[in-house]
Length: 342
Image (cartoon, rainbow, N blue to C red; front, top):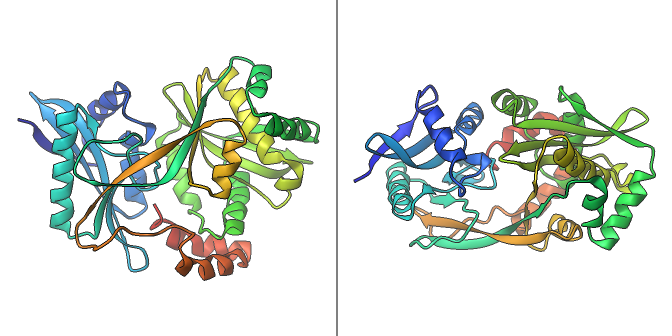
C-alpha cells in the first residue's frame, strides 16, 4: 500500500523528489520541484503529491490550482508547463491519479487536467489539441543544417547572410522587450518580468537567454531550458523586423548549434503548438516529427471540457484589441491576466 504525501515549499524531500524525477524516463523538466516555487510565486496554490513505499518515493504528481473569474477554476499538472501528469509505475500512477480526482472533488474545481506527453490507459477523458515537435541533434552545424527541410534550409541560409549576430545574455532586458512585443502582436498577454526572473533564479543551471541583434538592436530572443541532454526553446519571439530579417530562423538554428556543440545536447524539443496553427505549420517546415499530446481530464463541477483556445470565437475580439495596445500598456496589463493562462 502506498503512502500519500504532499511536498511543501520548504520540504527537505525536494531533493529526493528531484532525484526520482531525473532517474525516470517518463518525467520531464517540468516535473522538477523548483516549478512549485515559480507557480506559488505567481499566486497559485500548489499540491505536489508524491507516493512512498517503505519511505522511498515511488511516484510524483505536481498539481496547482488555477482559478479566475475569466478563465475558470482548475487543478492542473502543470500550469505554465507543456508536460505534466503522474510519474511512476503503472499502479503508482493510477494511485496518484485517483488521489488527484479526490483532491479536485474536495476543492470543488471545475475540472482536473493532466498534461501527459504520452497516451495513458486510465478512466480519464482524453483530448488532443496540441502536438510537440522534436528531433535528434547532429554533432556539427553543417549536419544540423543538412537535416532541416530544403525550403526551411534556404530560409536559414538567407538569414546567415544578414548582418545578424547573437549573444548569450545574463540579463533579461532585451529578452523581455523583444518577447513582450512578440506576444502583444499575437494578441496574448505577456508574463511579468518578475516571472522570468524567478525562473532564472530557480533554474540558473537549466536556463539561458539567447538574443539575436542587428546593429546592436535586439530583434529576436529566446529563453531556453536544458535538461537531460535536451534543449527546449520555451519562451521566444521577435520584433516586427524579425520576419524580413529571418532572425527567428537564425535564432533557432544557432540555438541548435550552440546546444549541440557547446552544451553537449543530443535532442531538441521545439515545444507544443496547437494543431494546424501557424506555429504548428512553421515547425513542420523544419522537418521534425509532430507527436500529439493526449492531455487527460476529469470533470468535477464542469459539464463539458473547457475551451480556452485563442481560436475560440469569444476571445477573438479580445485578441484584436490586445494587438492594438501600446507596448507599455500591454506590459502593464499583461501580467494581471497571463498568470491565469497557464
